[in-house]
Image 1 (cartoon, helix red, strand yellow):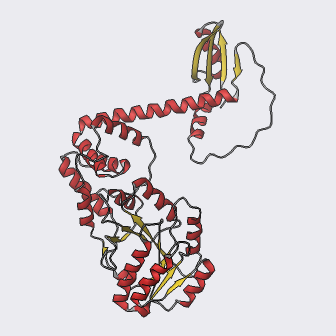
Image 2 (spheres, helix red, strand yellow):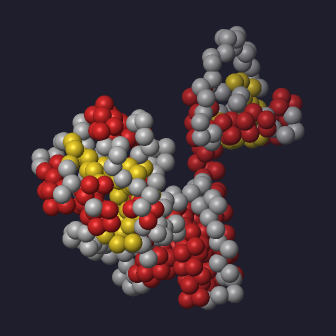
Image 3 (cartoon, helix red, strand yellow):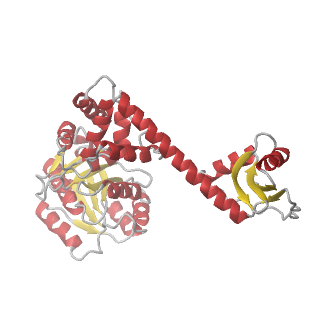
Amino acid sequence: MKIQRFFALTAREALSLVREALGPDAIILSNRNVANGVEILASDERGFNSAVEESHSPNPVAKKAAPSEPAPKANAASAIVPDNDMNLIMNEIKAMRGSLESQIALLTWNDQHQRYPSKSGILRELVAMGFSASLSRYLAKNAPPDKDIEQGLEWAKGVLLRNLSILKNEDEILDQGGIYALVGPTGVGKTTTTAKLAARCVMRHGPSKLALITTDSYRIGAHEQLRIYGKILGVMVHTVRDEADLRIALDELKNKHIVLIDTVGMSQRDQMVTEQIAMLSGTRVPIKRLLCLNTTSTIETLNEVTLAYRGSGLAGCILTKLDEAVTLSNALDVVLRYKLKLFYVGTGQRVPEDLQMVESENLLERTFEHRHSRSATRYEDHELAVLMACEATRQNSDLENFNVT
């Protein structure tokens, strides 16, 4: 975008120069009094719109440097603005645009609050339960306007229930068989959950139909923990260190009905997560990855974990440490927004008792019971208005195809 600077003795004369140079649709970016006259910065409409769209592009492409052209001759009437000044002006325009969007969103929220106070109440309660602002706002926006707060929350609960995908029949794992790898950060409970799953498999098919593999050779005693469980169940545990070892082990265990892989835990920000996903995806036989999510973690952490570990796709997830969690809203929010299939929930350390099939109604009932007045996420009306105004300016595609009917 070319921004030009115009000088004249009066504002009327400067505007006339702008109109002559850029036409009647010129965009006035700024004007100010200077020594001996007035200064106006302006651009043509097409260049301005192109620059704004380019600045908001999610994947800006670097432009090739154009051949150098002779600088235009400056005169007392107009001059091309230097690049530094243009960047400053564009930053100011972006800031003004963001401020205007927030103000418009705030006005929209206040208007909705006055017209549909019950929707505001639904939104307040959902946020207080711990659901994300985006999901809460989406549900409140689509709630029927003729319902009060309690009826609206029941409606929201029904919507969440219909959108929650669960493992309805355990035979999908135990009878169908296959290779499953439990992945997730350190300390989420992968090894214990692997042992619980292994015990269920042994009770259904016997120890001869099951094989256990661990890739965790980093933590001291990590593979020994699984070996102890394997010894109790009568199942041998195989240790692998890389993709070549894993391929060899899977070839040797191809006659097993079910193979469970306990992977090494690592931070979602560790670059080795990508290597781990590549290792599990590079075998000749398909490996279904189950992501273990700690229900005591914050929603920001769970978002990062899911984005880091999902790779080309997850078969599903397992929620762990339900016995330690105050509310399940953070975990359920992530499961719903990323459309993860929920296989099991872990409710303690006992093997295999504390691994249970999912009962959607019970999970949501427990989540909606968390509505006490001292919740850290319970906002007053004026605080909620600011929160929703900021949220409205964000582009969120997680809720596309979310069924609210």
